[in-house]
Length: 413
Ligand SMILES: Nc1nc2c(c(=O)[nH]1)N[C@H]1C(S)=C(S)[C@@H](COP(=O)(O)OP(=O)(O)OC[C@H]3O[C@@H](n4cnc5c(N)ncnc54)[C@H](O)[C@@H]3O)O[C@H]1N2
Ligand code: MOO
Image 1: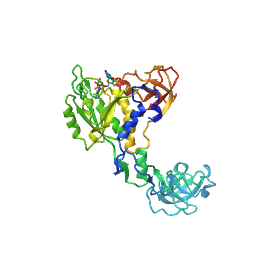
Image 2: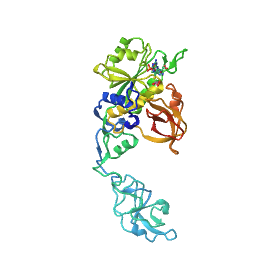
Image 3: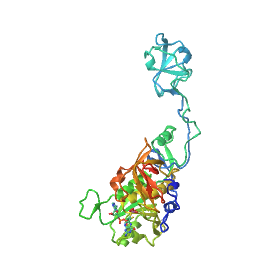
């Protein structure tokens, strides 16, 4: 989510703006240290310094096809009705290291990826030959360079192949391996302690009594942290004892960078998160946003950073997207901290509260550039959230959007 998506001067005066709260959350997390990891342990992490290619790719000129390495001048007269026949002097499978030069008037049988012999300038695919092994009939001419992958035509030795801050996904890890690098300097993942509170919560799989619900925020937030390249540990705490809450946190003081809580922060009589963290470095506030109004953040007893998210599942997830995800990515060294955003055409009318940035769930159609709403605005509508692939970001001053309006959408996948 870019800064522009949320900056507005039209925030309700008693509320903190989305941009201010996001900056506050981001300021709590410092850049994680750099460590060197084997490639297989780098998925999703950010590269800490530029990767300069120690070799070129391809490292040597090689064949793009299974066929015959030839000199194109030897085939100028070749045609389907009048093939040119050449002796097959060598067989070159991929991996052969002693490749003899090609003499004029001969062919080498060659496989995809095998070194092009000196003297050859092109490869004719086996389908355009009689596939002979002693002599071969070639049914057409070839251009110089045909079916040849030149040394260095992909990556040149000594050039930057990946820049610092790049997220290491499958393709990035593959190119590092292809240039022969076995380990990379990366920022250590941010370690997040995910805590959900609420005596109404029952672990999925258990039996529900009337008044109880299954716990879902802990799993959701831990998964969101992991998707953003962080490490998550989930803690569950039943809210009746502030001292027990502090004792539970004390066990993790040295092993977490961020405590992420959900629930227990609004105006109820039993708000353990608020009771335990107020006065211990955490400030609670209301942000001009819907869902996600009750928020809190700070530094717990000069140790880890704390972000308290509202308990309603959609509020929790949207708050994670807007405040926590960009901060986690920045702290872990990622150059790109925002989702892809674009403008889309609304297929149905909507209304939004004045003075608050509203995030509605939607489904975006990339073929038409249209977006439809997925469910109503209620912050308990987890079923709708699970079907959505984008958030519509509706500015603070906008209260009505008719069908056909242009709206900003944040793409979630
Ligand atoms: N009088 C007021 N009441 C409320 C206000 C307010 O300003 N004044 N704000 C409302 C808004 S907006 C929100 S959002 C919620 C936030 O409440 P809390 O963060 O204190 O969350 P809880 O009360 O603990 O829970 C809210 C809701 O979410 C469910 N929940 C909580 N944790 C989980 C979990 N881990 N897994 C699944 N579901 C969870 C919980 O059962 C409640 O239904 O407050 C409004 N009220
Ligand atoms: O503002 Mo609360 O976070 O929607 O329901």
